[in-house]
Length: 153
Image (cartoon, rainbow, N blue to C red; front, side, top):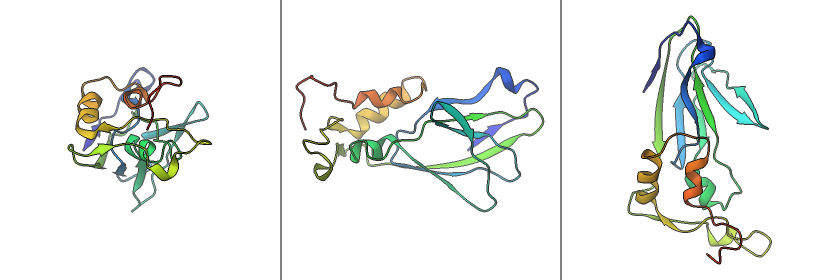
């Protein structure tokens, strides 16, 4: 659960820094009312996600981006505060076991779509994720293959 109290100067503070989730999928209940707190980054602009009554928001996480070799991108998002209204959100993360090895599915790697991510242990990635600052999609660089590095799938 995330609680965001009303903030008299929402222009000076973020509720949660921009980031993508390290999970496969994130299910979010935004809370009641029409207070927008969730924003997603699209085309270098922050777009508010309007709450819909009795609906859930599903975010694609870094694990899906790696498994699909970048076909499906994890969603960079942030939470903002509101000047007069507090907000509560409930989040559930769906992710593989820490013991699982993750990498792009072979069916999605070919000469037209070379491997973009290395294989890694999901527990190691999770540790990397929680021990680093939330900075956009920077934590996903843990899994990226640098072009010309010689690393292959």
